[in-house]
Structures are given as C-alpha cells and as structure tokens.
Amino acid sequence: MKVTIDSFGTTPSGEIVERYILDNDRGITVELITFGATIMKISTPDCGGNIGDITIGFDTLEEYLTKNHHFGSIVGRYANRIEHASFKLGGTTYHLDQNNGKNHIHGGSHGFDKYVWSAHVVEGKESASVIMQHISPDGDMGFPGTLSVQVAYTLDRMDTLTIDYSAFTDAPTVLNLTNHTYFNLSGELGSDISDHVLTVHADDYIPIKENSIPTEEAPLPVEGSTMDLTMPTTIGDIIHKKEPQILYAGGLDHTYVLSKSHDNIVRLAAMLTHPVSGRSLSIATSEPGIQVYTANNLDNITTYRNNVHVPKHGAIAFEAQHFPNSPNRPDFPSTTLTPEHTYTQKTKYTFNKVITSCNVK
Image (cartoon, rainbow, N blue to C red):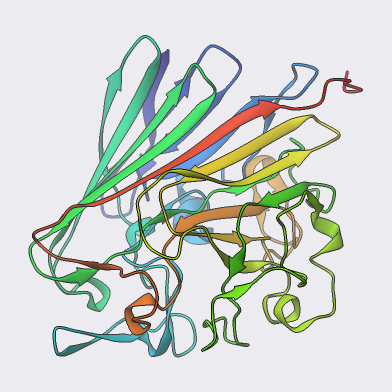
C-alpha cells in the first residue's frame, strides 16, 4: 500500500490544505484533501482494465472554496434537514442556521465541509488509512456542546474503502454525520447516470413533502410504489416519472430505511452498476438509513475537474445517515449524543467488476 502526501494550497486565512493519495496497487486510488475531510477523487479500472475517474470534484482549492456543493466532503453536524432550523433538547430550544429556506441542512452555511481538518497516516501491508480530526465549538451553527470528531478513511487490497467515524461531546447535542461523494461509474464525467442500474436493500422509505421534510406518516413501504428499488432498476426508468415524490425532488432525494432501530449492524445497503464499463459499487453501513440522491440540482454550467460540465442527474450520492428531521421526530431513531456515549459509524464502499463479457477496449 502506498500513501503520497503533498500540498493542495492555502486558504485565504493562511491554513495549509494537504492532499493524501491512497493506492492499493490494484488500480484503485483515493485522493483526499483536508479541506472538509473531502474525498476529492476515486479512480478504478473498468472491465477492460482502463483506469477512470468515477467521482465529481474540482482541480483546485479555490474551486472547493467558491463552488463547493459538499462534493466528497464530510457533512455535519447534521446531515440532511431539520425542520424550522430548530429542535428541543433537555427542555431547551436550540435555533440553528437557516440555510435551506426556513430549514437547516447539512450543518449550516459553515458546516464541517468548510473547515480544514488535521490529518495523519497509518500504513500497513494490507491497508492504509488517513485519519482526520476536527473540533466543533459549543454553539457552532447553533448546536450545543463542544464536539470532537474523527473520520478514518481506509483503503485495502480487497478494493474496499472504509469510512470509520467517531465523536464525543461535553454536553448533550444531536449529531448526524455522512460523506457526500458523487459517483458516476462510467468514467466519463459529464454524462448522466440514466444507464446505471441501482438496487437498494430496503423495504421502507421516508416520503417527503414539497420542502423535502419527511411526511407525518413516514416511513412507508416501498412495495407497489415507484420508490421500490429492491430489484435491480435502471435509474432512467425512475427519475423522469411524473409522480409526486419524484417531482418534489426532481429525481431521487430520499432516505431508505435499513433499520427502524439503530442497532449499529453493518449491512448491505445498495449496489450500483454500470453495464457498459462493467464497474460496480456496493455500499454497506451501520447507519439506519441511506439517502439516495441523483444530483438533481447540478446545472450543466458549473465546471468541474478537467473543465467538465456535469448535467442534472450526472451523478449519484449515497449518504449513509440517520433520518432527516430526527431531532423533531421521537418516532425516528435518536440522533442525541451525550457525554456518556461515543458516536460511531462505519460505511464501506467496495469496487468490483461484474461483467464477464467485456466490450470495452
């Protein structure tokens, strides 16, 4: 296993941002930067052995500073939405940064994706890790308690990238962390993902209102609905349907229920395949839900890596997390963290080739 470290630039405040490149000597590389604890780039081989970039990102730190939409970053303190940007905990009402209309999303306008994290490397024969750390002060974006967060990215020789999260607080707070990497397995950024095939191993999902807040009756069974992805389904057959849940989001932007109680068991959540390239990605997580987002807000105007324009539905994100608005929904698995407990999460991305007959040259 190889780890390469270099400088990726300096922020306007003078903080040095480092880049770490993990290489498992099997054609898979993962590039990370300390700004936002971000997965900047993942490259994997197709069925013909050609190495391709399968994630969306930028070439420069300046672009991450000015054009970032959580591409590849750690999202916190609270991934997804909190209705009315407020919640009650221990008899006190906390008011958060309103950055999604009247609601709060992804930790606010200056969430974890906007900080430079500290980092160090742990190397072994079969794997290598980059461990990143950040301290969020009491009152950060309105959240109570000083929070210490650690995220370890580990690439191994079994072609798996594991993200291990841990956190502790000095006062009761709420916490919901995720990584927000956007994937396009074709290796041709700028194409859409309509030809990708998706399976989500969930019998229930969280329906949303027009403002993307969960409905009162959530969760609901996927059986008999457009949201049923329990069998392999071509993404293009879903995201253009004229039915309310798809129209509200402009595609998929929904949490699928993997467990109705947070049992912390790592289970297979989803699989994405691209039949043409033969690439496959499986996601397993200890989280009770996974948000599936088909990049409904990309505009085909912003330039990304290699000066590429990415269209709407040009990628897909799998955000392992708790359910949206959980601090205001006692019927959902709790996101409360107290000083007596440590937050932990494990999410695994495994890269495979699934096509036995390959037409790629």
